[in-house]
Every structure is written in structure tokens, then in C-alpha cells.
Amino acid sequence: MKLEIKNINLGTVVFSVYPLVLFVLSFLNAIFAIGDLSDYTMMQKIMQVVLWTLAQTLTLVVISLALAFVYNLLCAFGIRGIRFDIEEAGVPSEGTEDSSAQ
Image (cartoon, rainbow, N blue to C red):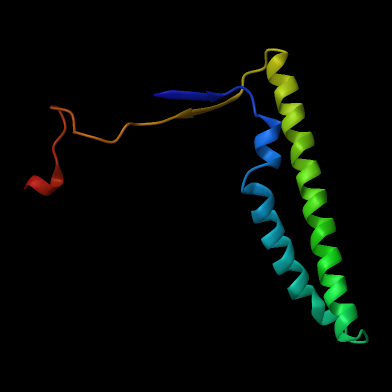
């Protein structure tokens, strides 16, 4: 079966689990970078992690929205979308042998 993505709904990019995943990855990135803040107090480190996480998450979501918009625009002009060839799993054909039957 052939599948082609022709349109990405921008609302699903914003209101899905995608921003939450970006938030968690940005939070982990900020936690790993906290070692460079040795002269800050604990409250300043916490605020730095929170602000860095929010800024990085928003930046990545906006970039993703811009890329999805450009992809939709190019598909609207007639350029082919991303295509997938998917094989359906199920009963093997008569011409093929099942290795577990031997």
C-alpha cells in the first residue's frame, strides 16, 4: 500500500503530544547544562532551567510550525509529498514459505 502525506494540520502540531515531548527534551538539555552555572545560587539555577526550557520549547515549536507551513505550501503548488510504501502484515501468500512451519 502506498501512502502520501499531502497536508500537515498546523493545529495538530500545536495541540498534540509533540510540544510536550519537546518540553521534556528541552528540560533534560537544560538540566545537563546546569553544571556551567557554578557561581549562581540555587534559585537562580532553577529559574535559568525553567526559562531555558520554555525558550527552547517555544523556539522548536515555532520552527516546526514554519516547516509544516512551507511543506503545505509546496504541496499546494503541486510538488509531491512524502511517500511511504507499506507492506501489510498478515497471512503469507501461497507462493512464499513460512520458515516456522518446517
